[in-house]
Image 1 (cartoon, helix red, strand yellow):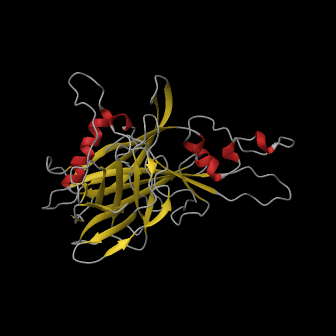
Image 2 (cartoon, one colour):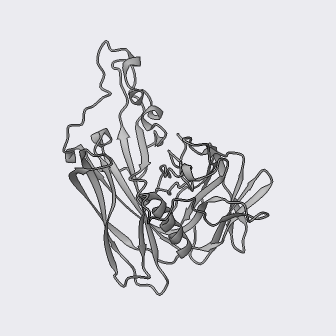
Image 3 (spheres, rainbow, N blue to C red):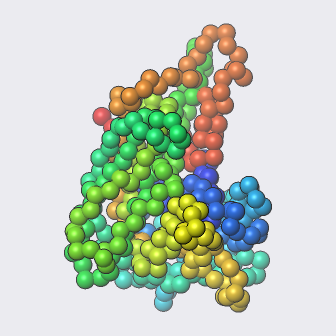
Length: 355
């Protein structure tokens, strides 16, 4: 399986956004212009979901290059007043923790030991409540990320916000998963293994809710948008994770959102590196990018089929007698070729159920 967390990790904060029920990944938020080469970037999310929790560690690279994964660190989850649990390296700066999840009333921190230097986040208590989402989608024709009009797929959420005396801050992550069928050359050869490809949908959109500025117990919002392509040829799943986070994490993502949406006018806040809650224990003046979040989470999911597509989706991996294999696109020959840096597996996820 390809690296499990965040296919195209490029963040200023290695913002890999956070775990889906089966996978974890995050897309590039290209703030490399604002960082210095070699700055340490640490990002992790720890929730109450039964899942493999991921930490990404990298260093910023020169202009126009992605961060470089750091795979020689020792990484631990710290539970206040208790012991620590090790993360295991999966290579390329990805570290995974299995069989552990956050528990109400307990506080957690992240510890990273790299070349004899210890980096540690602040302890955070898992929030007590989280809302519930009702999801819907819409097919539209409108400008996407170019000047051209395109058919797009939009994901919406109507969220019920719980009553609580505690301050409530929410963040949403939208992840997509699609099936992909590789080239099969009959007869005499067995069908190729299936490909399940995972990615973050609309990765530069930051969805936040501040419960301290409203008394409303309900909110509706557009969570993500993407154009139609051949990912919709087969069943296409959307997973929405609502995260209940603390104020510090909320303010961190607010700053990330400012950087992402900065348009460069004279009155905008200048883009700059966003520093999080992880420090060098011996040298607090070292600038470390990234954040370690502890969140309570709720997960909602739905799927659609090619029937909703407003455009014709051309199969590109159909066998043509006499056509040499090397003349087919790479995405027809291997799951890795199709994934192109995204997460993938040949094992069907346990939630991949549709009529």
